[in-house]
Image (tube, rainbow, N blue to C red; front, side, top):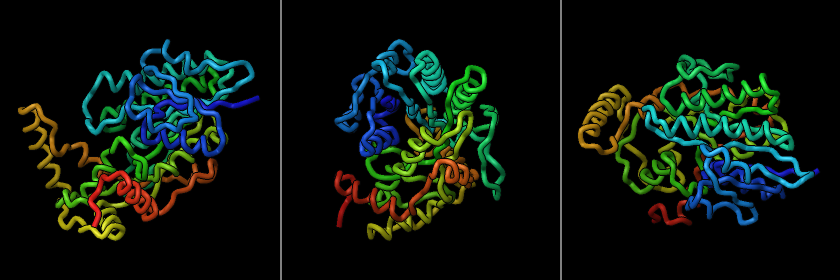
Length: 338
């Protein structure tokens, strides 16, 4: 029997890294991307690319269809990500409806051996400060903050329900934030790093992140295909890091001037409220949001020991990730060089 990996969200930061690492391992990979997605050019050439829309179940059939004798493993990485905490129909359609379509197709195709769903640590209820956040068995959208996290909680529960009610062989991984090279779409985190290096961020905010090297997350997703237990969830996290520490590490690597001034979070909250009100009147995007402040203020300490034990998940030092990302940003001409 031969195995083919079916990867959704393959043009994204994590999805493209998953494809790249599978190809390096000699795997047979098929990618699912939106029609005319400009980021599809970053998918390795040996990967078969199928265009479609998660919200259109019929368009998923060519992605799932394989010749006799081939078994498949679906890595459902695709997701609509937003820093806006507000309700969005498209967000629900993609993250919840799209995941339910993937579940349905996995059940229809008996040659599909397993589904690995890439959820988020945001789907897990926040524990009080001072306590590590662990995996949970049930996901309630009313216990998390922001509609992105709500949709990930709903989608995660849909996967677990399919395991218990329909016999689907599926497990879930919960990545925290993402950091590292080859972020061609320039995510919020990469954009922040660029601004720090280029001297365009004279002021930061107090608070913390939990960020993982995208290559380590990709390893965790792939390991879940082989080692993840049906109905189980695995946090793919790292050690908590403050914005001040991140700035200092970036400065140490590049020689740039680190951020010198950091807004206390209570002050940042007040500024965010004013910025949001001003933006609502002007129709422009606010320069700071209450949700962004919340994500820095919240408990960002996660227990990822289960993934280490079961999946063999590991994380490299932040300094190594930053060094590699800085080198990539230099190659891409995204940052100023001395």
